[in-house]
Image (tube, rainbow, N blue to C red; front, side, top):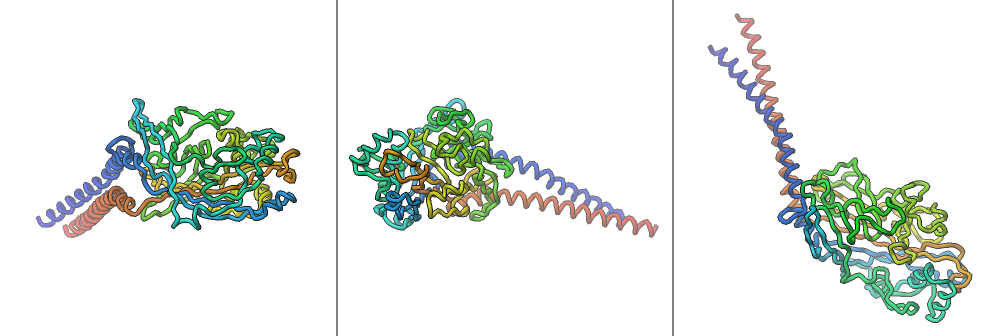
Length: 464
């Protein structure tokens, strides 16, 4: 009787172990569905969700660091046609994006519209000097008028105002504006800025289709741009890069639109990183983003000027004059990273470094939120040779001249990181641990009881 009880007990134990293992196995897909449903619900941009609270506020501190290219041989360039030599000067740091979205309106088609207010506050403690520091830089008015004003007229304007190809200006003036003696108006790289807005933006909330959350439906009321003479280049793709859809797959490219460069771009997965104990996926702009059309045919529609781009063979720069009122402004990565060698041969003193000059996004893959980013771009202007303009008579070729490069950056703060780890990661880890514990314990009980039962049966068979 005791043998039967022992055998029955072992069989019951094996059954119990199988049930526990089965529960552990069932908990895996059930738990995953629970997590997926919760994340997707909280990722919708509507009042009451985590995504909305993050989206509507100013969020983490965003800083823009500026490095200027100080010309060291301006007189030699003018008098002898010497190649310009520049020295990087900076950073001069401003806090930006500290104002929450305005005029938020939810639309019937599951989109939300808003204005993004712009502002910049100087941060002396994060800068190498005051805003009043002087820089010898390209004359913004002369370079800006070069492609717009007839050369004979521009020569008269330059002489009457006693202007030149280069000028001495403060950091504050170059960034935010000054009264130019030649144009008799305000000139500045980002003038006007404070008190202005970017948008309207209209984005999908993700309600009923979480894969579309954050994707831009319209910018300034339009679904496509009108800066480029091509449907492909005028497409507005992706989000604003502050977030993406949940459950990001590292195999997919992430698309986003940047009004700073008047176009959409994509980023590819580079590597996983640890950010305050949270795994994030680092996405970077590919070198092909600003490649010449002969290397990346998709960029053919971004080539606007055959002369300055050497028949569209120049890599590493984007002519955005079409969205800057015709002013010859070119965007590149800092120090012409990934650019054609001629860009650094025409202006000396540039030293591209991928670690310091590439753009990246660190995206938390479960939620799709961007937890850290560094947007690094360089603002350049173009000038060239002229038979009529005195300050350009010694210039031998079209020159895309670097004025300033900026690093706009933000990162998850400690308090938000701790909250994220407590509210999401710890729960996922606990569920995962429970799943594994049930599965492991159940399998162990089942196997041990089954072995013991087999041994017991074998022993009893030998006795009887």
